Amino acid sequence: MNLPFVLDIAIGLAFVYLILSLLVSEIQELLSTLLQWRAAHLKKSIETLLTGGEGTANDKSVKTIVESLYSNPLIKNISHESKEGIESWLRQITRFVITLGRKDKLTLKGDEPSYMPSETFATTLLEKLSLSQLTKKMTALNLKLMVKEEILDKLDSYLNQQDLQIKDETRQNLTADLIGLRLKLEAICTDFSTEKATLLTCVNRLRDELNSFIETTKLLAPTNALKAQDDTSTEQQGDPEIVKFVSQIKSLKNGIFYQGNPDSNNTSYSNTDELIRRLQPSLAQTLDLGIGEVRNEQQQVIRVSDTYQLLQNRFGNLDPNDKIYKAYDEIRKDVEAIGQTLPPSVRESLAALSRRAQINVKRAQVQYVEDELYQFKGEIQIWFDRSMDRASGVYKRNAKGVTFLIGFLIALVVNADTFHMVSRLTTDPTLRDALAKKAEVATNIECLPPSPSDTTTGKQLKCLRDQVNRSIPLPIGRDSANLEQQTEESSQWFFPPLRMILGWLLSGLAISMGAPFWFELLGKFINVRNSGSKPTSTANQTTANRSTADQATVNQETSK
Image 1 (tube, rainbow, N blue to C red):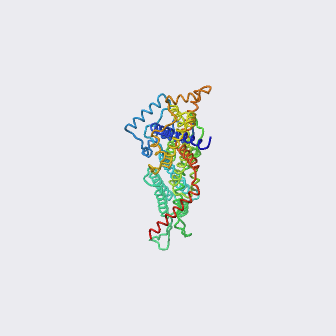
Image 2: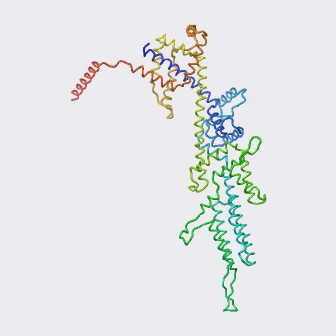
Image 3: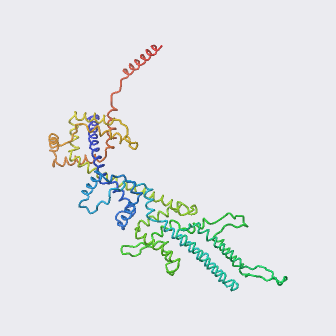
C-alpha cells in the first residue's frame, strides 16, 4: 500500500466528511435561529454573572433584574430579529414543540438580542442602580451636617461661652441674628435637596451668608462719637467684647471657606473644589452603603456594610423629628429598596468593582463623583467582557455537542458508515479517483467574498456548496447494493450491527470537527499528493530554453 493510495483514501473520506459537515452546519444554523440559542445563552450568562454562579441563591430576583434590563430601550433596540411574518410564526411553533412538557420553559419573548455590547450593558445597569439619586441624598445629608455641626453649633458655642462678657442687649441682638442665619442656611440646604440649586451654588451662598452675618455683627462693635453738649468728653458706644466674637467667626469662616490670605499674597486660592469633594461621598462609599444589610432565607441579618453601620450608629437614635434624622431616614429607605431589588451577590460584586475603580483613579485627581462614575462604568464593561469570554467558551462546547448529535443522526439517516466508506474506497478505484478529482477541483475554486467580514475559508465554503449540490457518487446511502456490502463486511463480527453503529459514531465524531477543519485538511492532503508529480527533465528544459531564446532573436531582428 503506497502513499498515493493512502492519500486518495484520506482525500475521499475528508471530502465526504466535508459535504456532511456542510449539511450539519446548515441544520444547526437553522435550529439556532429558530430557537434563538445564542440569545438564550446570552441571557442565561448575564443571569449567571449577576447571581455570582450557577445554583446560588436569589436566582428569582436576578431573573427579575435581567427582565427589567432587557426592557430598557437601549437593549431592545439592538435586536434585529423578525417580529412578524412566517419566520416569527415558525419560531413560535418550534419553540412550543421543543418546550412541550418541560419544566424549564424558555424565557425568551422573541425580540432578545444575540449579542450585547459591554457599553450598553454597563449603561443600562447603572440606570437600574439609580446611583445619582443615592449620591444626591448622601451629599444633602453631609451638607446639613456641615451647616449644623461646623457652623451653627460653633456659633452657638461662641455666643454662650463664659468668658465672652457682652451686654444683655448685645446678646439678644446676636441671638436674633443667629436665628435668622439658621433659617437662611437651612433654606439653602432645602434648595439643594429639592434640586433648586447646585452644590456649587449652595456652597457659595453659605459663604456669602456667613460673610453677611460677620458684617452685621461688626455693627455692634464699639465706635467713638462726640457728644453735642460736651466737646471735651467722649463716650464709647457698642460692646468691646464683640471684637473677640467677630474674630472667632472669621476664623470659623476661613476654616471652612478658605479663599487665600492677603498677607501671604495667595488671595487667588480657593478651597471650594476641595469642599465640594468632601461633601460628596465617593462612589465606593455609595455602593458600600447600597449593600446595606445582607439577610439569609429566614430574614436574619448576617452582615451589614461598614458605611451603613456607621450611619445607623450615628443617626439611628436621633429624634425622629430632627431634620438630620429625616435626611438619614430617606437614605435608609432607599437602601432597603435597593436590598429588595438587588440580591446581595449583585450588590457585593458592584461594591468590589467600585473599590477597584477607586484604586485605578486616585480620589485627589478627580473633580466630581461623575469622574469616578465614568471609571466605574469602565470596570463594569471589563467585568462583563471577561464573563462573556467564558460564556462564549461554554457556548462553543455546547454547540460542539449539538453538532456531534446532529452529525450522528445524519450519519444514521444517510448510512454514512466510516468503516464501509474505507472499504469502498479501498476496493473501488473508480470511486476513489472520482472523489479525489472532485475534491481537488472543489478546493481550488475561487469566488468573490460575499461580505467583507467573511474569512477566506468561509468564502470558499460558500462557493463549495454550489459544487457539492451536483451529482457526486458517494459511498453512502441505503440502496440495496450498499446495504448488501455492509452486511457482508460485518458478517465476521460477533455482533454485526455493532460495526455499523461504531461506523456511524465515528462519522458523527468526524462531522463534529466542522466544515472549516475538513476543508483545510483536504487542501493539505491534496498539496501533499500533488507535490509528488514528476518534474521536467533537464534535457527538455534546456531545449525549451533554447527555443525561447531563438524565438526572441527572430523577433528582435524582425523589429529592425
